[in-house]
Image (cartoon, rainbow, N blue to C red; front, side):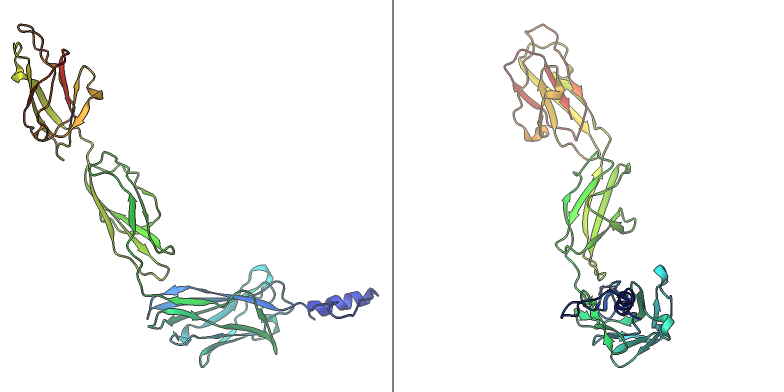
Length: 351
């Protein structure tokens, strides 16, 4: 007995009068929905598919049969075809007959106890080879009880056949080169908004990742390479976006002297002699007039600076103040020699 008939019988037994005008009692409409997984595949690829048919909870009746139209170009393997109802929520957990016909999959409950009841799902599982042509293919599904056809709630299940790879990702953030950051972070994106990402570090193998991606490390000193690819829902992979950089946490080393190390001088000109070495080369020097070298000005290696002014030494006969601090280095620089005007001691730092 359907829910609508049961309600009428109960009301009649209670002696309750019902208005019988048009629209006074609307029969419950039988409804179903259907989905398919996967929803995107590559051309001529073989996949396992599951089409889930749900008899909606608001339906009046249990379903006895169903049919799925196979889109042109898909080749279903009949030996893989199965159909079973779920067991959760008091559902029957029954096996339905599933037959591959001409252009359709025909499904039927073997008996009344195996019907697809309200709130229950029929899972139709099979493998199929996708067509060559790209496009969106609809697996038109219908559900019925006897001669009564259920109404579809939502849209018919579709599978997108896609053989076009997404564009390579764009990096928007990466460590400087060289860098002393041993836990670098990378940010990236892709114009294909449906794409996900896979990343690898130093050729260690790709794995799923998301932006931003941080490698907590600490990574060791030396050269490193980061690679990222975009992957669309069909499994198409983009080309690589790569970034190579060097981690350098070792301070450069070097030396500095003033006026070739003379203790005394009568000259008001100052000559700075600098020597520096570093595995990744010297980027710049920092030179300051005064005792606070950390506040000095960064300048390129002296080969690109001519002239460079420094403080004059004290009057003739006084000791030459060789106050210099060397904290960073690069290849040996050209000597910079020039007169200056301040009377404070000359100081310089190599960074």
